[in-house]
Amino acid sequence: MTASHYWQTQARAQAAVVALERGSEHPLASALLAHLDDAPEPPAVDAFDSVTGRGLVATLADGTRALLGNAALMHDHAIDIQAAAETAESWQQQAASVVYLALDGQLAALFGCATPCVKIAAPRWPDCAGRG
Image (cartoon, rainbow, N blue to C red; front, side, top):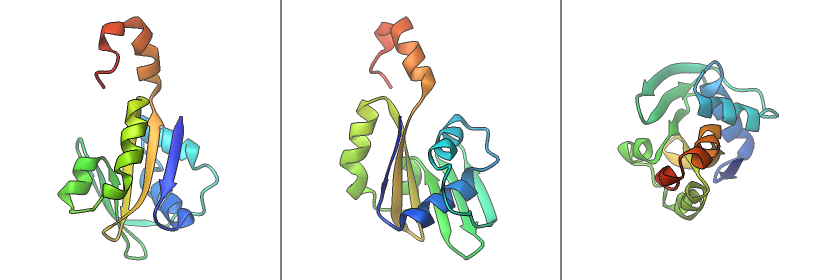
């Protein structure tokens, strides 16, 4: 399962995600890129910083400041993600990893990516189910 919800223009949000994730070998990047395979042409990335355990911070060619990552990254940059709380919780209860996108200081999109390793591991180690 990969799902998405948008608070800003869908095309702009999708293009930003593709710009940030293309070339990445991270499993969530692969899931996002597969989900967004029909996204508009992505902008160039002028500056890029990977924040271990949190996500990505970048500046796009048009000057847009983009953040893509978890809730902790959004909190670190004072992004209000309250509008996404209910959806994020629902997706997490379905064993999905939740990825937030903020553009120019505002929540732009939320993505839920169910990782194959969770689906594979749960039947083999039932005592771990539900521990995240």
